[in-house]
Length: 177
Image 1 (tube, rainbow, N blue to C red):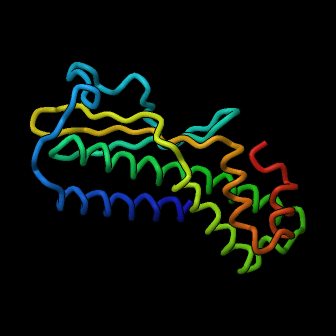
Image 2: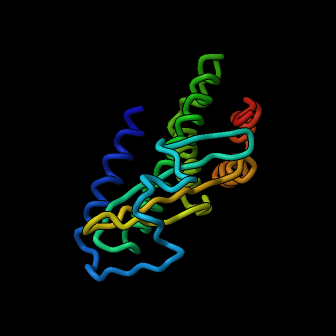
């Protein structure tokens, strides 16, 4: 939980830094901007992370002076939220394996491989939706990043290529089932 908090704080600081460095030129297009009367896009959920039987979904929201930056920062936030949500599930699985007596999952090498593999989820997620809404003198960007459960498993497996024994321990635990 503390790692998730740290990731959110760091990503927020980065987002604000990017906003401060962004150009002030307002660039919008009809397909990117929805009506001002809508509080949120219809597809946007006001949560950071969701999962269903087929995929993991991260949601992001950001504010900027132009629509392009708002959307870009929302995408970044959605990727961070996707990785944080999946990492939390993975950590719960690791703790469950440890509670059952397997100390291998507590070794530094395993933990490093696990963290690196779970961080790769962020890059592998696909933008499912993105848009911005013009609110007075600023834009609010929204984005959704999605990765299927099978793609997430493949990404994790790739992170454990150096030690297939570690992967078997994690995979045999019915991860994501």
